[in-house]
Length: 137
Image (cartoon, rainbow, N blue to C red):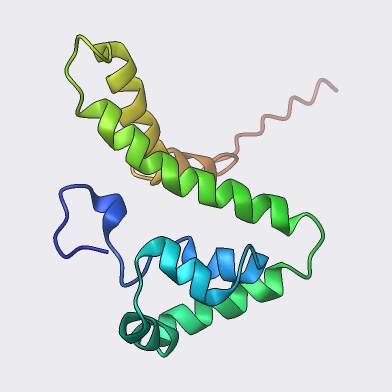
């Protein structure tokens, strides 16, 4: 992971997919680390990082729930798609149409909860109720 990367999806003390791959047991830890370019010294730092330990424990707990393997893989894909979306948004307009870039930007803002839709959803059904009773006796 990089410090101050151009693409914010690259921020982190370790790859976001690392604890998931370890929990899914896609390969041995040394082979997984090798695929990420993580050497032994870096692995020693990562495996003692309290945030990594907590992430790995959560992934291992989630694996006990049926269907979580699929959800974890979907999260891996969505994390990787952040980089794809970043690249598309920053591509020249002759490669990616401006309308597609705008849709990707809107989706990113909505997914981050920055468009106010979550606040609007919380306020549904909240307000002043007006009741009028007409007595025709």
